[in-house]
Image 1 (cartoon, rainbow, N blue to C red):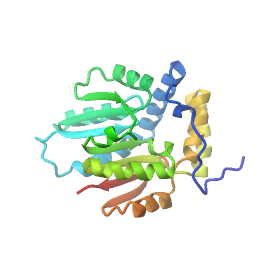
Image 2 (cartoon, one colour; image 1 turned 45 degrees about the vertical axis):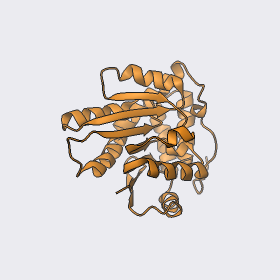
Image 3 (tube, rainbow, N blue to C red; image 1 turned 30 degrees about the vertical axis):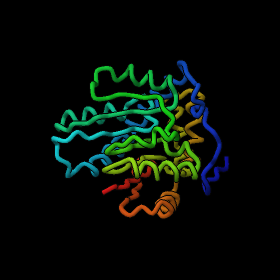
Length: 237
């Protein structure tokens, strides 16, 4: 099958339906989190956070927002890192799907510094809330280019330390390897279809560089990371 990765796909994913709920969605959320963790995806985001907080006084509470938080796995990883390193994190996860938020809350009950909200990040009300750091792990590719520019501009204004983006490299090899992952992890049909679409909605370095130029970012880095990820860090200071 010929795969065209020259430009980003605008094909929708099944998970873009914010009314979606039930066991199939729960299984998809948990499998995505497991695969992301196994392939080192959580480390890509965690390393980005470390780069932003390196010189921050440990006595200060650091607020981190995870946009499109899924089942909350990234926030739980951060909570455990903070506890192990005596860092005070205030961790907030947001998602537009109420079922996803309830699932994340159920999995995060033992973490008293994690909270969740079902919210539309495109509302003016959301854009008035400030954080130290905003994270997007496997979330930004869900949006079209114009939406990405609007969101990133807002995120920059809302953060005191910076933004960490961890998202997919749009690649023919990644596309074909994901088919193998589907077989190994026995992904359900929704996860398989959405995963392949996600890769085609992912990014090449040139896309992220173009966004950075259009947004006039001054202090940023773009790095390719395993497994077929780009880590895009924008520092506010």
